Image 1 (spheres, rainbow, N blue to C red):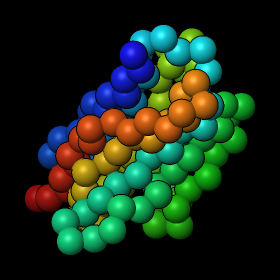
Image 2: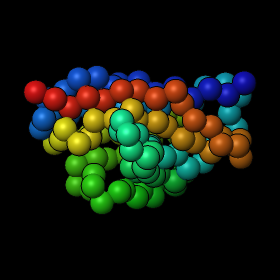
Image 3: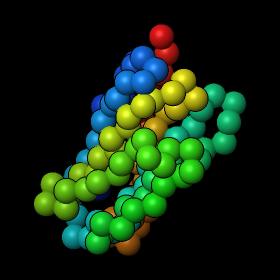
Length: 115
């Protein structure tokens, strides 16, 4: 059984940094594209960043230059390095991955940016 688990969320002051991790476990023979999404209270879930198996990346305009997505294919793990965090980055962050040609979501990790 395949599982996807996020970690690394927490409380950080404006201007601070956090690194989120998304780890895939189980019987994995193909980990393809992986996305990070976020959902703030009262708002729709939005796509934040994407990384393909080959390492090609794409970012939402709101996080370009501040967030960096990367992956370690040997560890089946994807990271989201977040810097220069703003209060409007506060949200639950979800990992979404295409694993063994099926779509999986993690349970989410809370990121709160506040002084």
